Image (cartoon, rainbow, N blue to C red):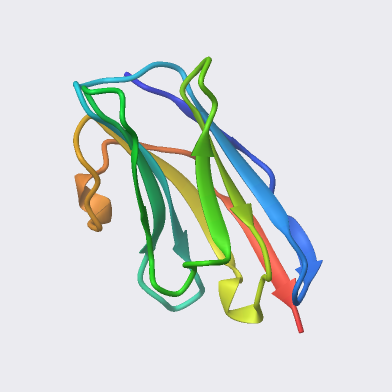
Length: 126
């Protein structure tokens, strides 16, 4: 069982930055994916970004079109932790952000992810 602990989030103004972090208690599978989904009120949960530890030691990343060029996902080399640096935040980025993980390649379906964090609120005021 992998446990995910999130940190970060908060209230910022348009154009400002925030950093989210998620630490996993372990990993599963030859490929291990950690990433972030978000869910705004009345909307479906959507994938924001993922990072996959591959068997060959080369990471692969994915970004939703809506955050490309503004958000960056990275990992800590010493442990299973990912961070999401969010720059140039917009009001439409306001949502609860959830860390998720699975022991396989990244997918966009939230139902494919086996492990979830508790969620952290990000609010961007205009």
